[in-house]
Image (cartoon, rainbow, N blue to C red):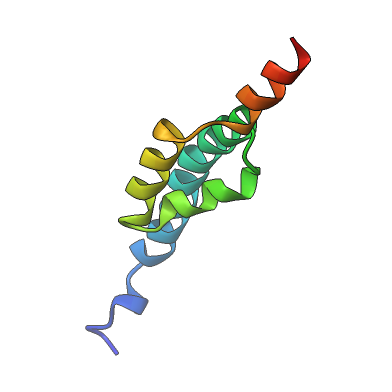
Length: 74
């Protein structure tokens, strides 16, 4: 087991770094989704490759529910 990556001390640090980076990305996207009127859990999709690009384009070019609600109040 000497050549295994599980015996290396960086293995735990790698996962810790990935979790921190995921939080750094998810928290702002969660806020953006909430402000545009979409549920915050949609921001978890930002972690999936290629789906994250689709999510960004969807948020950028769709009609936001928050805009529709604001137009009704005017």
